[in-house]
Length: 172
Image 1: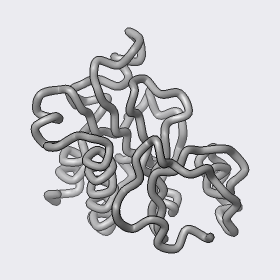
Image 2: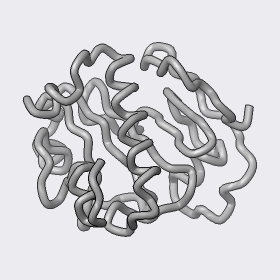
Image 3: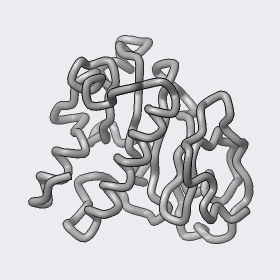
Image 4: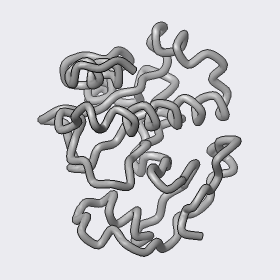
């Protein structure tokens, strides 16, 4: 175990997600995602490698609602710097591969159409102070407040990965 290279390719479908397991380290991460990384909380894991973990949201707002998190503790998207660009690109790459493995043929087209969203929360919607990229489809989200927190189109409170890259003067 330990997550080393599990699975690199292909991405896992939701139906084939594996349960979480205990991992050494992450004791300095006090967040709920730290507990998931330590294996103290359950999670339906779709992807894991040395840098990232992807799993189904514990409170999904749609049939497919996944979180892709870095294993390193980054508090939120606005805290990212140009040095974090390789990590941001990897989060997007993993999210895109998960969407494709679960039946989304053209992720860019689905994002443009508003049927799939990929984004980060900003205050006041940051519920966990550990960076996490939401991957959600189909839209609309199931409940009114959730549709507002997880909109089909990115905006000021739910910026896209591309917008986060712009904040640090980079492109994805």
